Amino acid sequence: MSRSTKVAVPDQLVIDVNALNKSYGDKHVVRDFSLQVKRGEIYGFLGPNGSGKTTSIRLICGLLKPDSGSGTVMGLDVIKQSPAIKREVGYMTQRFSLWEDLTIRENLDFVARMYGMSDRATRVNEALEKLGLLSRQNQLAGSLSGGWKQRLSLAACMLHQPKLLLLDEPTAGVDPKARRDFWDEIHRLAGAGITILVTTHYMDEAERCTRLGYIAYGKLLATGTMQEVIAQQHLATWVVRGPELAALAEKLRAVDGVSQVTAFGNTLHVTGPDASLLTASLRALNLGGRYQLEEADTALEDVFIHLMSKAEDNFQ
Image 1 (cartoon, rainbow, N blue to C red):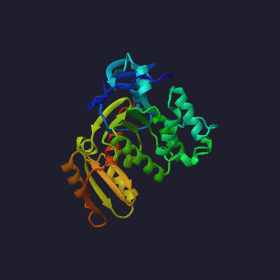
Image 2 (cartoon, helix red, strand yellow):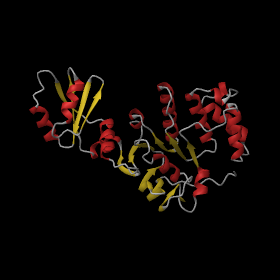
Image 3 (spheres, one colour):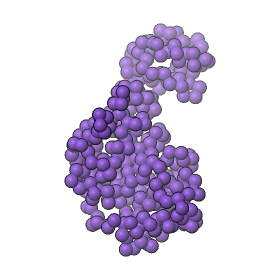
Image 4 (cartoon, rainbow, N blue to C red):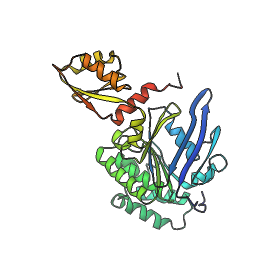
């Protein structure tokens, strides 16, 4: 793989795609997908498994060609210039995809060879240092923990100095400290002007993104900052505390105005789309004797569950 001339990325939109579609047989996996992401943003993709997140990422990075639609990624046409896009992005897959019988340094050196880098040794040394891998550079990749494999994968993605990183559930199966360290590195990269698109199931990670998109069964259902995505759903939320919450949850699910009841530790989050109706219904139950009810801000996880309940499974 030879290195091409670096693409000049404007300060405005790094990703600008419109109405992308992808089907496999009779399964419409990505449906009229449109997305705009600015330089230096961390854009988080949320959605259930099988919702089309990975396929959408592969369309953006040039690994798949859309059946229809249009747009550009780093100024390159997603239909006509997909090979060039592949050379200019860093893509980190869900599963560790490097060579387990090579050391960390050997893996990075091999990737650098694939890109035809003339300054291969310098690039590898820089990657080892930036990602804190120097002390383990001679360790076989197959013997690394999940967190160290994650660092190695990110180092490999960054070797060719891409302006766009596409990270597909990069912290799945990684311990909390490694996840936090990884996200600190993501914010450092974004601060240097690198644009990042990341899929995640973790709400705390989603809250660290600049903007979010919720995709379900091929459709992008909501997008914006965390506050905007929450506000768009117009949900009211009450928190209920008290005894025998499991039995109460079943009772509350049958109440008019309640769209979902979710257990959070020793509390229930009760949400609904009509604040007045929800409030009136809860007060009519006269729970005050045994239970404490308190109005609360709707959380991102409440919105996530609400959007999942509304989405139509395109594989049904």
